[in-house]
Length: 145
Image (cartoon, rainbow, N blue to C red; front, side):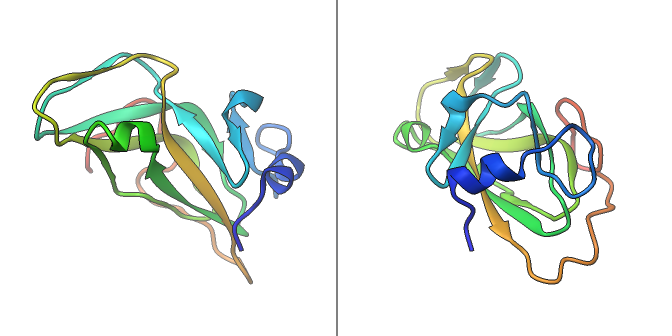
């Protein structure tokens, strides 16, 4: 089940409180009917045909009963930007590192706060175990480990 905007708002709780969804900073402008727009955490240049790692402005925390997928917003998709590595496990905490590939011929500039990706939240049944991997508590751009 994909979470609706009203369910996302209902599930958002105080930072770090067990069992709640955290999106920090949260902006109502970024809330979509069944997703949330993630913003770029700084200024980045996307050269053609290169994977550029870009961090989100938002720090997220997913409780054990929510997982998420990441999608490029259609505006950037129409400019030839592809988003790879798009799954967030239940229990993940931190900023997200996006791998953006510019398939166009020209450099593209991303400015801090540009809404480049959508996070879509899913209900996980019997979510007993949460993420405890090497990218837990990530801040900023994190290279492959």
